[in-house]
Amino acid sequence: MLLEERLSHLPRICKRIYRPIQALTHLMSTDAIQRAWQIVDQIPGRATGAYSHSQGVKGLRDTIAAGIEERDGFPANPDDIFMTDGASPAVHNMMQLLIRSENDGILCPIPQYPLYSASIDLHGGFLVPYYLDEATGWGLEIPELKKQLEAAKSKGINVRALVVINPGNPTGQVLGEENQRDIVEFCKQEGLVLLADEVYQENVYVPEKKFHSFKKVSRSMGYGENDITLVSFQSVSKGYHGECGKRGGYMEVTGFSAEVREQIYKVASVNLCSNISGQILASLVMSPPKVGDESYESFNAEKENILESLARRAKTLEDAFNKLEGVTCNKAEGAMYLFPQIRLSQKAIKAAGDANTAPDNFYCKRLLNATGVVVVPGSGFGQVPGTWHFRCTILPPEEKIPAIVTRLTEFHEKFMDEFRD
Image 1 (tube, rainbow, N blue to C red):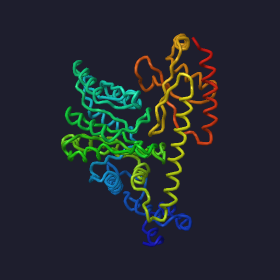
Image 2 (tube, helix red, strand yellow):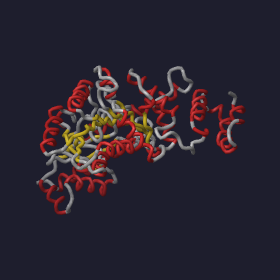
Image 3 (cartoon, rainbow, N blue to C red):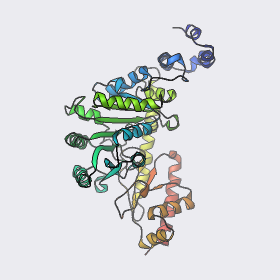
Image 4 (cartoon, one colour):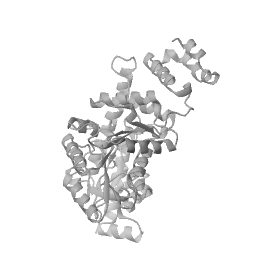
């Protein structure tokens, strides 16, 4: 349909919004214009101010399901997609559904993104911690899962789900496929819901690692739709796009009974629907330009430039941390963070106690006041007792990284000298 014909079918306010497209067609690729009209046609009333279906616009969920199917090589059902205002509300929704009382527990990684501990507390559940193994690059070990599961059961805790963050936040590791198979098998045997936080799936920086969704892994093991209960979370806030303020995301829910699915839908319906702009972005994240599209080359060049830059920033910071006295840092395989361990002197630990704060927080506040560089103490994420860490992002502009390294290095040397035992 020609532009003028399309405009003639739109309400007057929509004509004012879309009229500029006519003047800008020479600046836009044909596939971008076609995609825009396709999206407009899918939205109720052709306006982003309208409510949608509580799970999200059907056409956008179709697009996301097609993107999942292309990524994994296994079928995806748009009816399994629940659009949310970022991944966080999806996590809250699942915790609300899973937790019935303070005796219901959720296995959660330590260190972990505090959304999970906060959500478990909010809904009155019990966090069952399992410790990632720093010595093996923050590995997720099955014996540790079994140990913590049995310990929780001995306390009368009914463990209902396992949270896995892959790639990891704050630890930056990427799970190997064999490890993922073991995790799937563990959840199957123990009857646990697998909550797969996969929001950093595009952020993998080392050639020896590759992202595999837990759905793909479980299907490749021969487990079908009803053999394992799995919830996968995705967001527009991460990846190479980083549109965190747009609040777009979704969860793919598979393996639940019809009765449970009905309850998931009821919870989703409480807020009527997620915002339409976020829904649109989520569909675009899962259906980027393809080879042959007019915009593909420019899109792919920008995407690769961003990811390659993030990889360089991660390696520069990783190397810098490992040169500091008393600091060790595992390889940043993915996500957007490093989580180095810092060995503090007894003098520094005592000074922190005198200041009524944790030793890693003491270090981080001193760093902030001296340099303006913000890192987050590991005590905010959880860590093995007696160890101290901090989380550092790789997000500052690449040209500013050398100056940050210089400030960090100078501060650290002075701090270590000041608090040397």
